[in-house]
Length: 483
Length: 78
Image 1 (cartoon, rainbow over the protein chains, first blue to last red):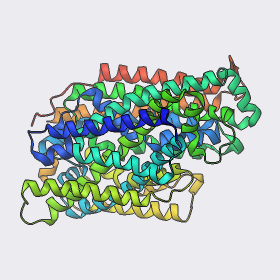
Image 2 (cartoon, chains in turn green, orange):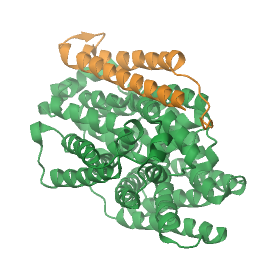
Image 3 (cartoon, each protein chain N blue to C red):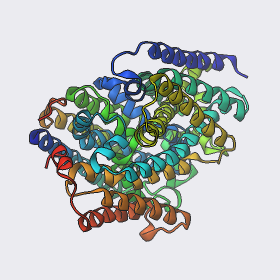
């Protein structure tokens, strides 16, 4: 075990828990549910930007992505840069309309929005189940990433790394709720940024400058410095699929979308777009570029997911490495905490309070139940992460796609097409979920495209056809959504 | 009421258009530049598509938000 590394890491975990405790203490207006699940709509621009980026930049961008770049070279960096427009797309497309309507119907979660728009318990139920399944899968990925990081760096076993990591995340999420989640996101976003810049500088210095390293990459395999990657793996249709999966499709991710409900005013949103885009681009570029160049410095890795922590240990002095390991760690923690809080919100608020219980339980009961549900979900995910696969990026992308196949059209067309109704939404969600899992399960790739592209096309078609075949939505919905 | 809806619509459209423009520029830099060309040791396609292009679009995005996005009162009921 390496004390020079462990001390900064443990201090960092302790600070995050402390922050959660402190933020959990001071809450007042709006009541527990509004506060625990949404932080009373008080986010400013900087925090909004950081929480968007931190939520989105997960274990797959910090552990899995660089791992893939290590194997595929500069072509994978090109692929990663597809994600530059995500922040302006998500906030620009959903942002204002979402925030405005959410305030009028007092919506706290995505499912509240779906209920207001489609007025159908069945839509909410289906959305809730889809959300839970996909979130459990992505949270497992995050836990694996965090544990891999601790394992590589500290020499702890994978299992104890997992316990330490999961313990810290669960504790501050439980205590602080949504507000703790966004504030720790902001702190973690800054650390991610610093960590990325320092690591990239360290890698470039250790390798003797970019030009030398490009030449060495070319000597290993000319494919590493070409946009097509080794053996032409990164084909045109593969890249185009990623345009749908990690750029346009991101609009349909519920844990990003919920951030559109929670910001303070439109100035916060405008600032959030600019800062978020800038920070996101720097992070994506820095991490993947470092991973690709890492092939020169540490050519013999068997588990590509370990490239990031290994590089940090190789190029940085131990104390600095420990501090900046917090960067990828932060990325992972900040994704998991927001998914955890949203999964709990789905179970407690959307499914239980809104649909299952006859009489509203006492506030103290709701409070205890919310925390209990958060804890239980965390423990389930922890249990599932105990036996990890080798490259987590594929697992993550799979869950990503499933969420998009279910939520994309009901969210986007729900906001911008007045004629859509609950039949359309139901048809779209079912078609998306079923076609996505069938295509993925049988490994069918029409025209070489990833399963997400045909599934989104089919679910969009189902939405339109389903809506047009049944009566238009009620007048209240039409006035609410501006028609 | 209609005003906030139309503002949101216009901004959503602008965001999508900018993203499509980014896609076009990204693809052009990556696939049209011959992979053998280099500049100061950097592969030219990489320099253009992964450094220059994102920087350009961050600036364009900031300009779009500054000049085209309108501040609205989210609490307003009509």
